[in-house]
Image (cartoon, rainbow, N blue to C red):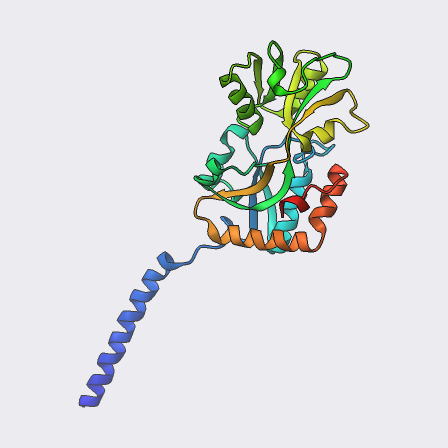
Amino acid sequence: MKLKTIICLILAFLIVVGIAFMTRQPRQKPHGLTIKEGELTVGVEIGYPPMEYLDTDGKTPVGFDVELAHRLAEKLGLKTVFVDTAWDGIFDGVEIGRYDCIISSITYTDERLKIHNFTKPYIGTAQVMIALKGAHVDARSPEETAGLSVAFQGETVSQRYMEKLAAQGVDFVPLAYDKILNCFEELRLGRVDTILCDTLVASFYLSPDNSDFEIIWLGPSDEIFAICLKKGNDALTEALDKALDELYAEGILAKMSWDYFNRDMVSSVR
């Protein structure tokens, strides 16, 4: 009789524990590597060729960063989903969880590292100043742009570069645009004197099919692009770092660089 009572008490105890365990389980469910299971959601600012822009159908994202995102997602066994985002809100988007990461020509800086996670760099670039061919612009550096109008994409390294010169007394006319596409169109129409942007974008507009422009100044190659993630998202950062290492070791990053820029822009940053 005593044995039966003990067994009944044990069974009752196990049932109570089991119910409590099952009740708590949903709150203890571990988070996945990405926001949505099976997908790598990538924030991009479409309109920055050849890094990210729309194909001839006007719908499909293409470009170096887009291909990189696809290849990284494939390494992680994930499907790629792109979220086109205005540049002035792209960093807020990753912090509030609209997307897992930003792969959109993001320049790595110490200031940005304080508030976001970053992967290892995947490509290097530099600032360049561009003028319309035959415009006879005398300036041969941003420091010599006094009296000239200088266009750049707003909230970028190019804008910060020119703001520093303005603080030093260089009296130019700053013109910030939402997209780099607008800068080049304004230059083509003669509405601005020069553009400041990075060499990767310049390579697209100075190709044989787009020869209206010329580089009048090339800055030092000290700028690097990396993938930006939410601060503290170390698991996905490490996974993307590993995938980047594999793409570099396999020669894929270098081949992509040759395909898009006709030169190796990745080896120097590894």
